[in-house]
Figure 1 (cartoon, rainbow, N blue to C red):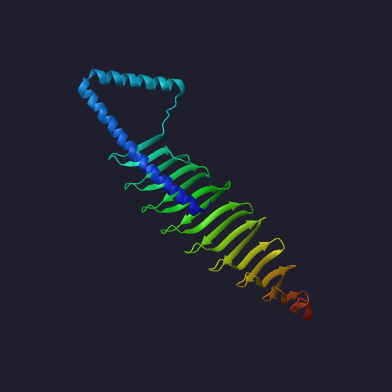
Figure 2 (cartoon, rainbow, N blue to C red):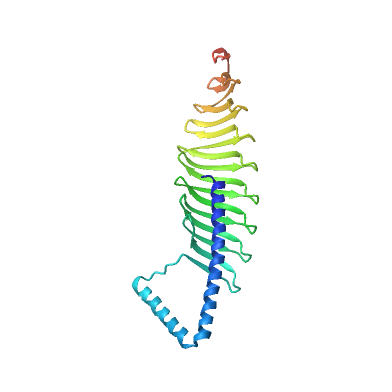
Length: 263
């Protein structure tokens, strides 16, 4: 499940949680009203006895297992505004924390896809998403337009940090595979154009054409620099290097066969 799909799902659950909160507050108000009516109609003895009975029942429950069971809890501030809600939805338990304006700024949840945490700005836009995908952690940072700007993930090949443009295309990816770090840069169409890596055999810089075929390759060979140039078909055509005896240049035909070299 992508970050966008997870956000849409959480948005639906958040809306449902808000509706449940309103129902709980209405129900609480009705309960208080009924208790007041009962007290007015029966005098002081009945409600007091009922309250004592409820307190005794509550204490009895505490003595049995010290557990309070409920489907939800709502916390209000001194002005009666809902500031926190702990409850259940279709996916599982959740905890929502609201600011002074009633905006859910923190959303901690557990659903069928795993645990998640969403942090929102004052305009109710998700800005930080931390969740689990296929058993692996993922952290996404979003801008004020709800567009992912950066994502940090742990996958099968290792950790990865991706940077996105405003069209949701990955433009840069920093990876670590088999203890070999690498950086890949992509164009606006999502094609890889540059690759930089620190391999066990030495550093490597690759430049790619629009068809993602390598066109230039700068690398170290036995601790000596070399530059290889390739044609449209990916065939090696030129190699420039530095040998122990000095500089070298080799030319190749369209089939990759050497046709000239110096020294």
